[in-house]
Length: 79
Image 1 (cartoon, rainbow, N blue to C red):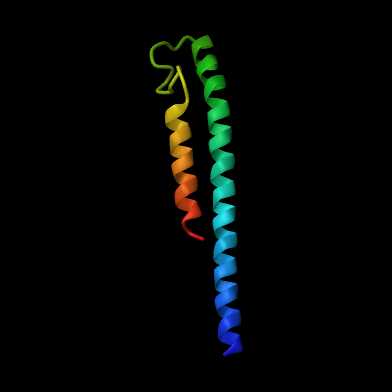
Image 2 (tube, rainbow, N blue to C red; image 1 turned 30 degrees about the vertical axis):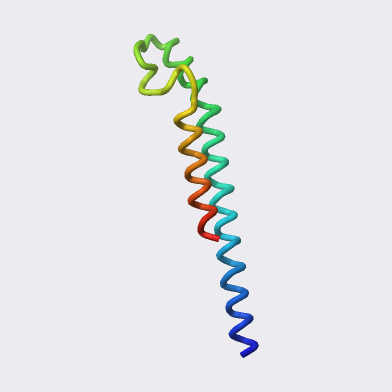
């Protein structure tokens, strides 16, 4: 009986640890992508590309931010 409780606690704890790692990785990647988006848009304009900045959103980064938040919410539901 005691080993069953130990196994259940370890399972729950390791699942929460994996959830925390997934949230950290997705938040880091999202933050870096949002930060790099403006730099890439500016460099594409310097190279002579015109139009929609290579498919990137030039006015604001709301779409990418919302996607990052959704990934974090779904990753948080694992734990």
